[in-house]
Image (cartoon, rainbow, N blue to C red; front, side):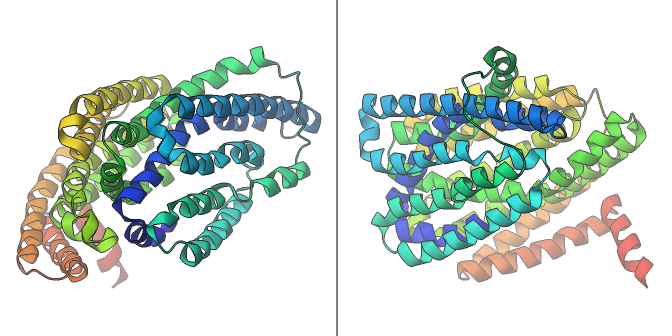
Length: 460
């Protein structure tokens, strides 16, 4: 997450709107073929390979079979990518950037990162990732200085992502011996792999279709504008959903051990905390979005303000859909509902993009995201409510919505002062935070009052 926060303000200013659009469109095209090459093998290999990790002979056989299937799918992905670029004339001007990004396909296969996950060697994965991202940041500032350097930036991005994968393959021999084999036992492996692959396709369409369709139906300039709002939206979601990531294992444990009371209490606490954080964050971002765009990407990207405001609204639906899918349905082993919901949302997103982009450009993609996220949320809530009832939700929601009105008023007043973007954002955040939590205290919001009693008065 720190990598884009550090690099994106520099990159967007140096590359400019059009070349940033070319970069993002090229990546969106390659991402589909990266998915074809991956074929859901990473998830499948981790899940099944863990069964054999104490038996080196069986793991060697399994790893070689899965790796060989991955090699075949990688070759197929490259052939399909080449055919696509040759067939569609619109892609010819992006061919060099697409070629650079396509290096990721082979190196992801060679990387066999699933081996390290099977052995839970997360420290190696983390430190290796940090090291190559630090090197990439240095390379970025050394070699990317003008708008035409977007190809170089694509190469640096690939290096940051898969630069260590050759070493991964060599070092993996400490755990297992992987060789290419024609005895792949395809019938045994292919069905579960394709189930995971289907889910991955739905998610990929859901996440990437807006950029791809914008690039095809509009141009690189529009993609560049939308890339800024989409990047800020992604960062917002990542920050707000941090509580979910650390809570999922605990909820899975409680549900698996049939400790339903603790499951309900934990789920209720997390949900109410999200309500407390998401609404003011979204309201605040809507009002300061112009200054955020100016601060991060500069005046050339100011058109991204409207799409960012729309995407900010989508964050509300996205976070709560994520809560019900990852924290409720998946621990309850209802992945099929999550898959169906994702597919329906992806189709809605795809259809709305095709219908609206010709008329409303990047704002159409943002609006399509709102509707798709809303559909996803309603479906996951419909089934999630059968598993858990959130305690104290309504009272918490009413006080949060009321307090969020004061966030809007605070940000609006600060905008009238015409401060430079940085100070406008700082003052808006400080003033709106004071008024927001002040109103919650007056309204006797249970979460806030409990926190004050436990963390402040208890220490005195």
